[in-house]
Length: 147
Image (cartoon, rainbow, N blue to C red; front, side, top):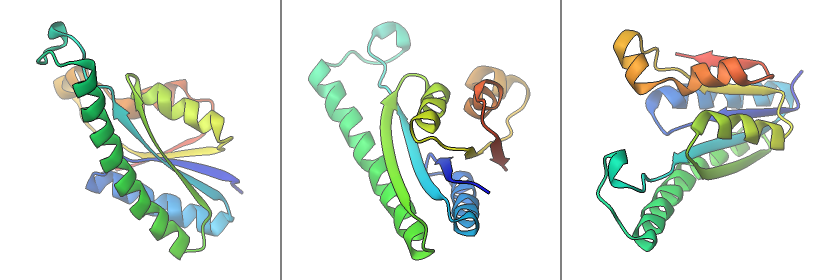
């Protein structure tokens, strides 16, 4: 059925449901699971609404975020391996989360993307955007969205 399933997670409880479903699908399909967290790049100038920091300090902050993300991904890997699923994990830093998810799905030759949606509507969706919506509209792969 599937050969490679990419699951995008931000470590939230809702994303954990997507991870559990992706592990189940991978186990049933004998597919490889690619667990991905995209860490948003730290804003670099005053106009982005943040305090100006040195490049070294920004690199340190981003490094800490990637390390925390990798710790969460390691837990996903343990859960998957306990079910007999082959798993790869990837924590990357990117300004464009949805595009990074799509690019990683291509890189790993995935045939399904699994992710969660918070289901925001109205002004919250307009202001916060929707990475899931972006992936749905720009990916050429099937996307399983869980809420």
